[in-house]
Length: 196
Image 1: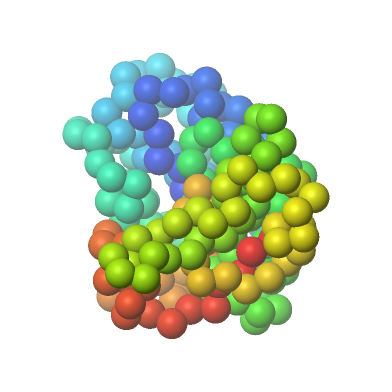
Image 2: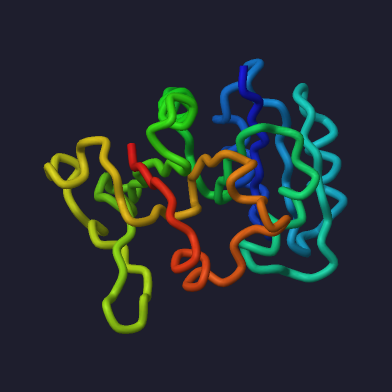
């Protein structure tokens, strides 16, 4: 069975982080949860992580880092075969992990993203497109209705947001580093990106 390392960067929003972690399935496929603390008040967060029934590793950064750099710190020491990156404000529903994991392990994709919704039910993210001239990422389906045919089916996309994404560890660490420069990363790599 594939083992998953869950990685969550956070800064000063313990309330969101705690909700995010509580909604991560507590089963044998989750190898570890790593919280990257980007200069939050360290003691309360560390105490909370240590008080939980499941093991939550808390890595403290001295200074706030970008999302990519925060993930680099955690990913290098991650022990899972699969990385599951989450924003601290992501609410994961019960079937999300299993569906994403199935797409990865059956070979359909190298990276899988999940649809994200605003609290009012409109789509926040359902795949990324790029502008032609600057190669700038665009959330093409932002504010689409949940029933829009463009967003209510599993499909291949050019890229996915990293707010709730699962990927094979071995693919993303060929060069022992994670995405730092978004534009050059997508120009250099041909990945099968899939959206559920």
